[in-house]
Length: 432
Image (cartoon, rainbow, N blue to C red; front, side, top):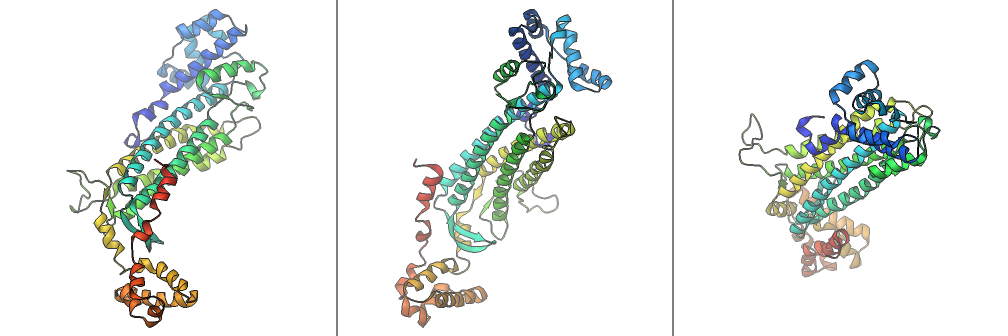
């Protein structure tokens, strides 16, 4: 975790104090259930809640000797609870605490990430409607294709992040399971009702079947979901980076008063925020392969997954949290230049209307191959010489026999390309 890319709200989820607090709650709730079942005295369960406490430094000190973090925690807890501590952790194994705690942490992290996505969605929706009919050139392979609107670009992203939200909601549901099933997951030393009680208290579902650990396919799916969201962040960041290039300059990141773009060149206004987002997306995606490799563990359990998750769980959620918040700010403050969009749109002398001309010629009775040849011949002249596409078509006898000058001029109407924008917006944002 790098403080530069860390928001305090997400970092708090992964702090030792939070982790041990969750461990304590798991143990205390389990004691309540055990007392209700008559396995341990009710006074012992009360003592855990009343006197239970821990110190991170003391746990670390004990662990240096025991080489076991859960035992170190339980030892420190017992120092506060007293004799009744012998009833804590009855029939449980370390993974019951560790895996259930991780589920709580990932669920809480998911809640923050969902809030982040909502901020991105709100910003995208506002900018989409603001530029619903701001016409710009669409590009395929980086080359001018046909007109679109900047609002549609924002709507594309909104639909993508809406899917991201749905995926993360499902991933949160899948990851938020509780396992209190004891050694090798058979409940031999602990009643399944203890697991159900702890799960309910912590807002988790019961893991249907665990093998002493919660199955790691759940975690693999979760981190894969984060990676897809990160890729969506990068896709939009890359779009903005391209649009900010000097030769394009259709949109750019907000450049604050006093901001500096280069230590050497005072004129620079660099897309540093979106470049940063591209890098953060790579970090989030780096968690996927280790998470996938964690699925195949030995028999009922091993701990080869543990060191991996201690790294990727905080890092991936912290980086994505920061990235989503940054992206929301970039979208909200993005500076858009409609006049540059129109200038770029007209840069190729009307070639963006070539398909419409092609279709009109076929409708007028010319074979598709011949129509394509006619249109491409004049289009290549525009590419080479910078001529006016419409004028070349009107002067061509083959074209003019099929289409008169008025018909040709009508094929260069930009409104034709925006006539279904309302329909698309209704699909993305609903009737409202």
